[in-house]
Image 1 (tube, helix red, strand yellow):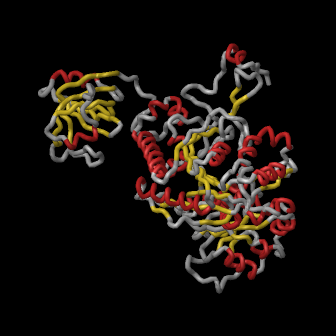
Image 2 (cartoon, rainbow, N blue to C red):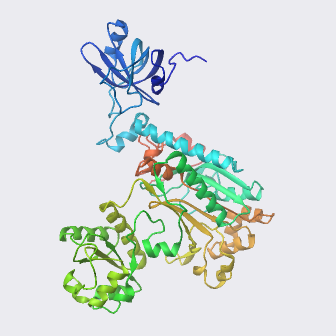
Image 3 (spheres, rainbow, N blue to C red):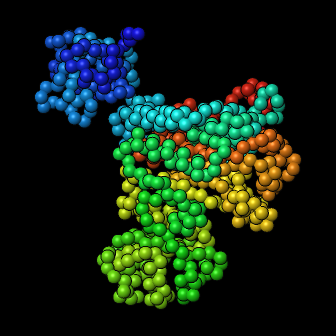
Length: 600
């Protein structure tokens, strides 16, 4: 069917030299050279230079004098090669231009609140207030198109492997998933509420009981939790579940999916194959976090056994109190000034640490440590250690001459938090975070439960539907903290992309887990009765995973905030500046829902 506004997109002009075409879009830039007027026309496909010559088309030239940036226009003319020496290699259509014969202004535009071509210096709140304009910018259009291609690739990949896409409800029952629910009051049932799904966890398990065997959906999920750069109150994940599988089947599928996706959509980015598979305890020991950035070394090492008998009271006191001393070596940083080292100490304190101990090893990189003496170790605490202790610490941290050793002493959780973030900081300073490298990895063998000291109870490390290893089931009665979960995380470049697990398919074990988590029999029946009953009707062994689409596209797009790859995101404070949500509602609406607001 003919289009009355255009015959071609801007990017197609180069294939039609000498022919007449019609294009439509936005005025990206206008340049008046006193006779000729040049317009850079922009549509979703790209830019095209249009030339208005009064000797060729006087009326079109007159209309062009009225055009301003972001006016919506339609132009008809002939495609011609640009004169020699005026080509623009920076755009795909840079060798051609459109000689305008007819022009029409379809709609004018007010002056823009920010330029379309450059976001530097633009307050993000302004961009979010005018998000519909922000999305016009080429960078945002590219991000949205990348997101589309990622989702389309995933759908095609899974369809070819026998998966069925099934939508699950948005209005659900409130169940524990690890964060606060968003609640929706029911008009028909006063005092009762739906909950927006944190994930379709129980529903996808029920679909396995239904016999679909391979399910997926691009699922919308909702969590009422504090915001950060890689988190939004509503987000999108690939939700996936399979029957008759173990961990290896799920992980192999994920590796094949992501390897194929990278080869198709981002072949310029290097990845490490096969994807490393590491244990939870290993990554906590080596990197201080369960979502390590594996693009570089700077591995942590525990030196508690070396320094527990030293004369340094800070280390001895931390170890005696049940804590640890860990550190890592920053290569080539021994020449850090006092001010630079003080900045690192403050960095540690800002993240909950008591401070930081630094030791600079004199000498150039690549030198020998055989002749290391205490006078070559520059630190305020060198006098508290023997040369043998220092040499052992240097060896444990795989350090050498010219390196700066960084140590933290405290409870293990504090030390790991401080050093894992300091490790990233030093990697950024040293240029070790290669933007053209993505290292995907699977983290396995997490604890099934963790002790909640404040609540005096066991909590699920992830969620209560995760299966324990068969050989660890007897420990549920004697030592729940030692039970390993058949759980796996999928991480990349310091971000957790997804979590998944083999699920409990035996109702007796599931009920036992609920009891260990301190649910009463009444709470179990009320919250989980439907699931326990379903597991008694021939539930198959099953497992799944749920990679986050937003974080994945953020990494592929080279952005550092998921708001850059979501069309209409919320702010850090979970507000929508464009529509002013959340907002007050009328008394009539509250009355219909049988609600009344109470002043705090």
